[in-house]
Length: 178
Image 1 (tube, rainbow, N blue to C red):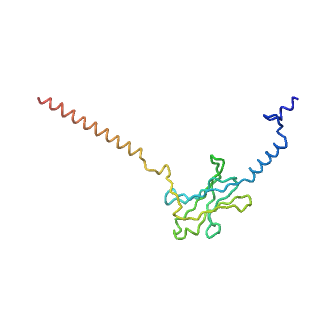
Image 2 (image 1 turned 90 degrees about the horizontal axis):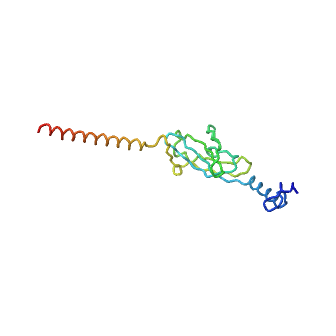
Image 3 (image 1 turned 60 degrees about the vertical axis):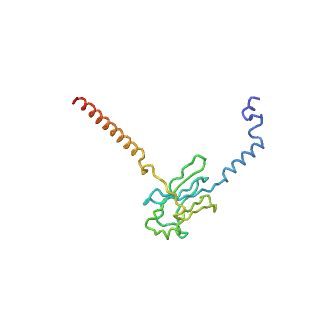
């Protein structure tokens, strides 16, 4: 039958076989109902930049991230960044908090909260604490090691050329007096 090869799989079974259909429905159900909670991290590039709460490794991408104080949403809280895909098929997003007008003793009142938007009560939070903040270096603010090494090598070359020129002059000026 010419039409039967259209629906036949490698083993000759139809794609619409009841066993295959159960598998497809189960696969779709798992994809729709699967959720992965993120890991939350607090990052600081360098003072006085804001503290960034990074939620990474979550799935699906329908979520929100925000700061609270004493359990209430911050009235002037930052808008979360866009949700970005990661290489492992999960997502990440971040939200900033400017805490430099807040005393360090008050930091424990602040929490970064991640919540899925699907109506479930799944959430994760992390309390603002200077012990858990990870410091990151901005590539444009790193110490210019390459520049320093280049300057040192350049100065050494100039010194060697200068010393060589002095010795050359000294050697040939001594011969002129003979």
